[in-house]
Length: 249
Image (cartoon, rainbow, N blue to C red):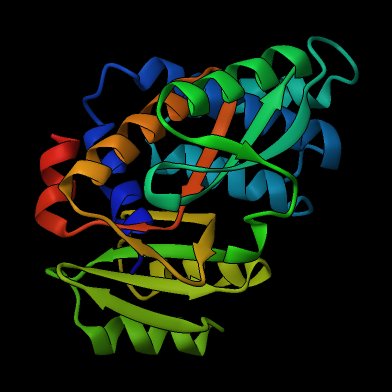
C-alpha cells in the first residue's frame, strides 16, 4: 500500500470528527451533482454517479443530502456550471502531485492552486509531466484486524480484483476502475466490511521522505485539500507509519 493510500485512510478515520466535515460534504455534493448532470440520475446506469454516491456514503453523508445533490444534477441546466480540471506539479523532494478540481471559475482555481504550490515549496508542471507516474485504479481498504487475508483474497479475486496487498493493519484491494463496484459488492455480500471504496490514482513508484520533507509535504497536501474547488489530491510519497500518524494527529 502506498504512503498516499495510508494517508487517505488516516484522513477518512479522522474526518469522522474533523471540523472540515461541512466542507467535505459540500465537495461530495458537488461531485454527485456534476456526475448526475453529465450521465443521468440513475447510479445503475451511471458509473461516475455510483462511485460518487458510494464515496459520500463512506464518509457518512446523510441520505437526504445525497438525494438532493442528485436532484440538482438531474434538473437540467439550473445552478452553477462546473468544469473538471487537472493540475500536475511537484512538491518538496520532488514528490509528484495530481490535483483534480471542479470549478465554476477556471481563473480563480488556477491562481489558488498555483499560489498553494508556490507558498509551500512546490511548483506547477506542464500537463503530462507527472501523470505517467500514476494509474487509475479502484481501491478498497479493509481492516486486517477484523478479517483474514484468505477471506479478503477469496472474495475479491473471485469478483475480478487485480491484487490484494497488506500493509500493517490494512488490506488494500486493487481493481480496474470498471470492476470497483462488482468487487465492492462481492466483499459486502461476503460480510467483509471496508473502511473506504473509491476510484483513486495509484503511483507506479514512490518517493520515500524523512520527517522534514514529510512535514512540508503534508502542509502542501492539507492546503490543497482545504481549497473549496479541489476534489482530490494524489501524490507518490512514502512516509513511515509512525511519522505519518504523528503528522496526521
